[in-house]
Length: 332
Ligand code: AHG
Ligand code: MN
Ligand code: MN
Ligand code: MN
Image 1 (cartoon, rainbow, N blue to C red):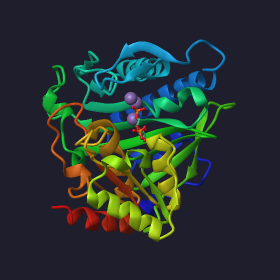
Image 2 (image 1 turned 135 degrees about the vertical axis):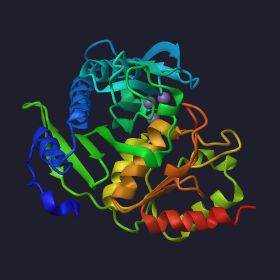
Image 3 (image 1 turned 30 degrees about the vertical axis):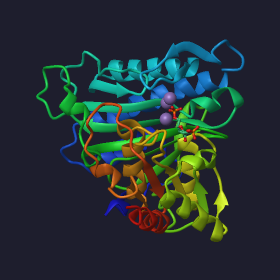
């Protein structure tokens, strides 16, 4: 029972990680160190985001990434910062990132962990002062240490995740993560450079009255998808869509709601990426009592075929996701 260590609000992230490590007698501290490395990079990226209007790091970088998206300068900066922190931390052998086509070998061939990361989520919102985020997912490597990580290490099903989390750079900056024993949220105090436990044992409402979907694409929705959106309107749900998955997800996690990025005729597998967006948030939402699927199959059981696989995402309060799945099941 993961409540045995209900640490008081105000505990620092470092102390929390250390105390939780005591739950695992055989833990040798590598995962704890890895979580600290991620928190360090988050502090650095947070500072750069908060200054982006003041120093010349706003706007487009001038490259397209493997997704065919116009990379923003902060996409690239965040990518560099997280890769450097994970390389220097020594616990991670290989990284897959939204911003790099190939696996990134850190040189830490003794590293036991692999990380999949979306270094900056919500790139279209960077220059307009709207919340953005970072999403990460952590696996234990399956190949023997002593060599570089392999594709098998990087393309494990979501059920193999040992930890997952996100950072939301919003009105306050928070880090929310799980290691499989519940979900805990930490709020950053910049003047002290510390994350403090502010949202212990987050549990998501079983239902809600918020739906998040880009209705600008509704001309391309399937009939079943259109029928479910009509149902949400009949239920008088509120439409909330920020355009940053992390921000929409975080609000729905705390208040109840459903976020959908569906398959459309233009994007038959949807837009969001399985390894570093969907699986990470699916692990978190399930640990908080919610649900995540592609409309039919549990997200964490989807078999990855490529590092940048896309999949439709239906994620949030259990009852809302199950209702949406009922509609999608009517689709022949
Ligand atoms: P990213 O910025 O990491 O590429 O992700 C953007 C994603 C997600 O954050 C957001 O919910 C979604 O793209 C918005 O897509 P649309 O503009 O197509 O709705
Ligand atoms: Mn992107
Ligand atoms: Mn993203
Ligand atoms: Mn991104």
